[in-house]
Image (cartoon, rainbow, N blue to C red; front, side, top):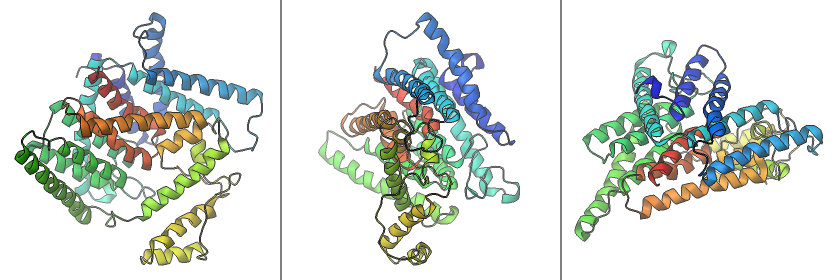
Length: 436
């Protein structure tokens, strides 16, 4: 890949990596949004001036332009009239709006990137992901005192690529790279693919991020499923039985590795699921309070523990939440653990602390209200269409991309990726090109 050929989506990837590396030297990662905004304007402005490629616009493109217009109108109106009737803190905050506008511009740059450049971008992502795998091997053998590939104490000392700003995006890039590898090589599960699977499994387990690991497992389940069909009944039956055996072996390998090289032995613990559900309910409370215009970009983090918004969820009278937690750790009951999680959130309402909803759909819904809900529904529709494509249609030229979009539901339900949503748009764009 020559530097002169890097533009559009591939240039954004390099800017992202560049800003991430700078952040390792105590420079703010927010520099990425500044650089990417400047690049997006530089990239898109000639297309506006010369109307290049603007005659045929997909609905997704048009909706992004509408979002930019909507944000500008609401912000301007909020400075003229008092639309914050509940006096919520940081309501339509300018700094967060600028970051979100930067992300929207990045989405548009990806959507306007031509086909040949999208393929280069997938190649670039694949190479970055293989480098991350190499980093994970180094990280495993290096002592913590000199290990530059692990996160800080607050993030739990997890494997974090030097090229990524956090362990979550490290996991996402690994999955994107793995999917790009399968797509570009049109790979079935050969011996080479098994080795690649084991290497990526090792790297993902080092991140200790359950969401990424589960997404990776489901990606492989879908890929294996696509090879079970056959017109010959006996052969079809054999493939289906072998499919189940492969799944069992794949899951066994991952969980064996979790028990031996991972820190999270309780990988199947329901406590994380309960916590996510509790935050989801809290997000619904906030969405109702800021409906229909939303609280503005960034409000999904700042309003989670706002005393202005009550936490409407029933809690059983189990007494002090610390005592509930002690019982839950002994495995007394699912119900007690559930009530602890609810009481944990309730105790922090009014504390002034911030908390992510850990749910990208909720990020959009809280930030943009009704428009955000429609955007989230649009994402879900694309994901549902991808599931149907994988399960029903036999096309083998694009199903790797559809597999990722189908499995991205796990990522978006359990991670806040609103500021890095453009990364997922890259594979959507690649699939859109292939389907034309």
